[in-house]
Length: 218
Length: 256
Ligand SMILES: Nc1ncnc2c1ncn2[C@@H]1O[C@H](COP(=O)(O)OP(=O)(O)OP(=O)(O)O)[C@@H](O)[C@H]1O
Ligand SMILES: [Mg+2]
Image (tube, rainbow over all chains, first blue to last red; front, side, top):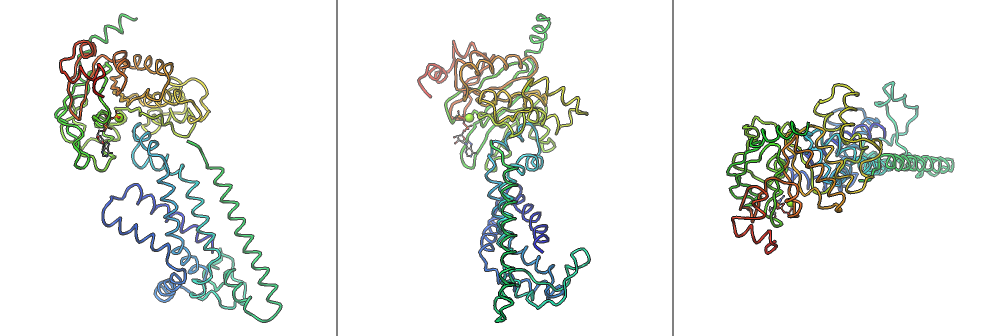
């Protein structure tokens, strides 16, 4: 589910940022959009859960508790954060590099894709992974789209259409296990927490490694 | 051989490469360039001098439409490259900048290898059909340390790399905005030598704050003051026998 979120949010977020930062005209419309994006980043996650419930389940009739809907909700939720981080990274690329590229006769597109984007990549990656990491621990919006259901069967693998089967997410699982009185579930929730933390750690390590690889001085 | 080159030069001497007529530039409400007309000749170095903020860079950036990237800037007037109006809506500014190269005040190599820096222009303009051809173009401009990052060079080397990058696309006009302002005398001398060589193939426009440099490298000099072109003529004449009192006081160091 997180993978699906990443796959959806990264291209969308980066594309939106590039457009807003490099191509969009500066007028009242883009100002409005800008303010809205910063506001959306501060909206409590549970509101996204309700939105997801209304749009994806009630309106678009996607199956309840499915990872697909979960991923869509988390995508909506992390999108503003990622757009903000990406725009900051794009803006941090020195203007002299743009001048240099334009000066040898690169088009706007070539300038952005050959020079600005590679230089902004470390910042974009960091922002994305931090956004995803916060989504990883998110419980509230998932509760609302029904990802709490006690799941009796193992969901099918993602390639066999498992994206539509009922499933649960780790943090939600922790939440429901921890609130049971049965002592057997205490151990389980502890286990789930450790798995969750391990995932977080791995993601952050990947972020650091990627950043090291892409980092360049100028 | 030398005679031949000299003859070619004199033959080409009086050809107008870039003709600007009645150019005005506004930054919002600021009137930065006021009704400037200049003919820039082929195979010559033209120097723009004048006090800070008088609009030298602004005018230079009109010549390859770099001012298009500044949203508040508005350019009016008529600028022709080989008789062709460069502000014609049918002219692609990207194609134009391939013909009119630019070197900036601050060295700005791409954070890539020296090879990639020089090869970038020819690559995007499709000047080389194969890797070997590309290698050949690059090797004409830069000889060694091709794999090293361009940002690891010293300031003077970086500036020469930027010049190499600009001429690798074989432009017809080369614009240089204070290319030596961050360089020591030795690096400056090297760049000036390079400029003199470039004159054989391009027409060069250089903005400089150093009178000595203008006198050393240029054949024509234009003096700007508060957005006006005060005087334009042969470098020797401007420096020894200026017609306008403002030019005189500037070159003798009284206004600046
Ligand atoms: N992007 C811009 N936006 C608004 N005004 C500008 C901009 N660029 C330049 N100006 C104004 O235009 C005028 C001319 O600036 P310009 O950079 O051409 O001067 P210059 O002669 O190159 O000076 P210097 O010798 O210090 O480089 C200045 O008054 C400056 O304030
Ligand atoms: Mg300047």
